Image (cartoon, rainbow, N blue to C red; front, side, top):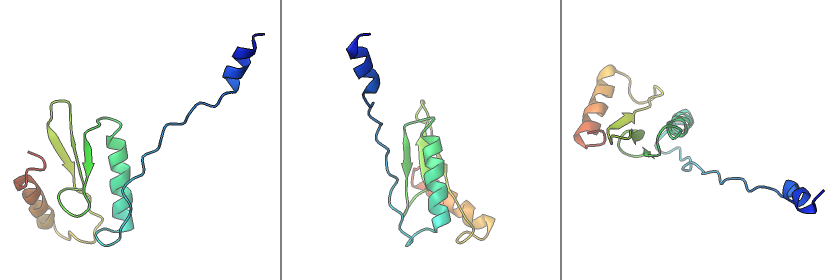
Length: 101
């Protein structure tokens, strides 16, 4: 048997780098909100590389498809938005600031 084949089988292949999510800071969001945002963003990245997350302004996650149509996720865990009108106001504000238009 050729020794180069054995050597090739024994060499370790590099593991791709794992991107770390943005650090958690409990000043603006709960741990539950952070977890859901990071998890949903990672799942979205499986379908498009055009994904952005925000922790202090705008929608929690903004992504776009191949046609550059923007979509957003606003995650609520129940601590801030208590009424449907609160969410409607957030959507209106995000649309006015051109996050999804």
